[in-house]
Amino acid sequence: MASLKALKIRIGSVKSTQKITKAMKMVAAAKLRRAQEAAIAARPYALRLEQVMASLASKVTVSESSPKLLAGTGKDQVHLLVIATSERGLAGAFNSNIVRAARRKAEELEKAGKTVKFYIAGKKGRVIKRFFPTQILTDHEMSHIKTVAFADAKAITDDLIVRYEAGEFDVAHLFYARFQSALVQEPVGRQIIPVALPSAANDVAATSATAAVEYEPDEESILAELLPRNIAIQIFGALLENAASEQGSRMTAMDNATRNAGDMINRLTIQYNRSRQAAITTELVEIISGAEALK
Image (cartoon, rainbow, N blue to C red; front, side, top):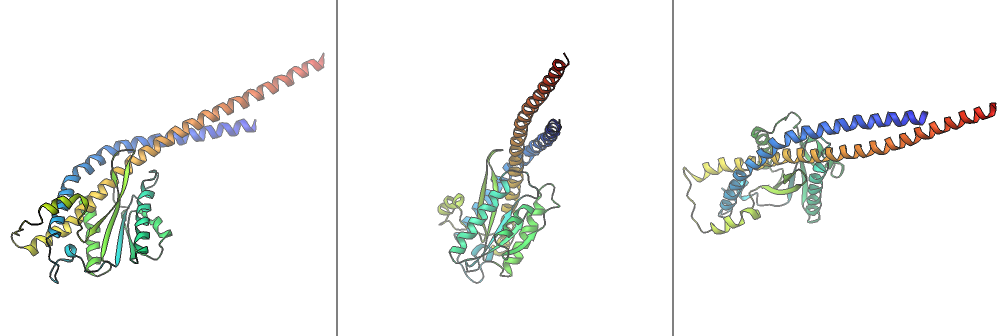
């Protein structure tokens, strides 16, 4: 009887868990649509601005007066890895894939003799401290964010630019997950400071390398506005991609958890029925044996 009672309690516990995972799946599915639309809508502008800045970077003649965000510091020694993750877990391998990609990049840079620092944007990115406990530059607070806004990306951008101009790092790389579908979220690492020539912009840069560029009102004013905005837009796009990827990964993870809970309930129910049947059979045998003994 004790065994039957324990099985019954366990079945009830798994059923309660299944209700929770099913509810979480439905919530994630509802949030996914809005997050996916926002991420996809932001891509064309972010890509075009990146291409424009890459084209400008290909024409820059590096001098003391060149903007550092465009031409760089002239060094390539200290690399800052910005790790953008979520604040919550229960999202499958979403966060761990981003951290793993950043960790691989860090190890690659260290093998090349570079100094690596980390900028954590998202609670789940703190796991990197286990591997690089003394190399955390800052842990940017993001727990207050419910829905990603451009102001959130700008706050990170302003902080990065201040640190860059203070000479805390030479190159910054951003790590996040690009949303492809509810089943696939691709971890991405890209250079955001100074402006790089990514593969997506190579063709544009190459075809326009010989074209003359005229600035109105003047080069300094335009670059002073465009360079920080480009970084903010790239970070904003990454945060939107992360938001969609998080919900897609959570929906898939909770769907798998719900299915696994269903399978476990079936197995436990079969085990419970067999144990109950065995107990009933034992009781019947005892009753019959007792009746026979009274004859």
